[in-house]
Image (cartoon, rainbow, N blue to C red; front, side, top):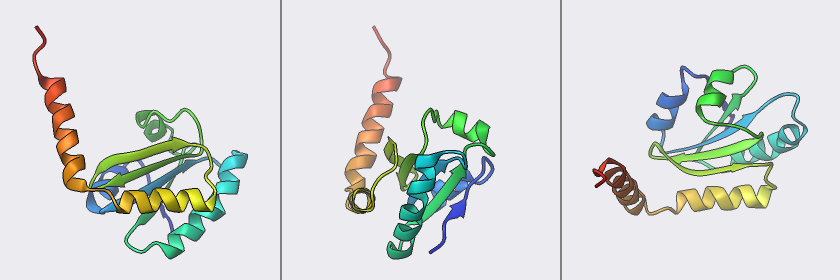
Length: 127
């Protein structure tokens, strides 16, 4: 499966419309990004049910800023529209596969419960 280029206009809908989305935030001048790209592309060919996306941080500077990207490459993983993993730095193939397997194996009922508890705690009035 090929990777999908995301823009500020397509990012949110892509993340919410797909069960599992991995996003590689990169730039053409970034050496670690260039070394990670073939690892990421190869993983996209062997992991059905996962949308592999990329964001060129040079072309999409506003999106990178909105996502608070301060180091590249950064890998983000979303499941059911929820950010469940974020890490800067190029991963070797086995570590990337561990991330993918971990995201696939998440108990999303528990994740939704935790998100709701965190949201409620933020909205609770302070004394």
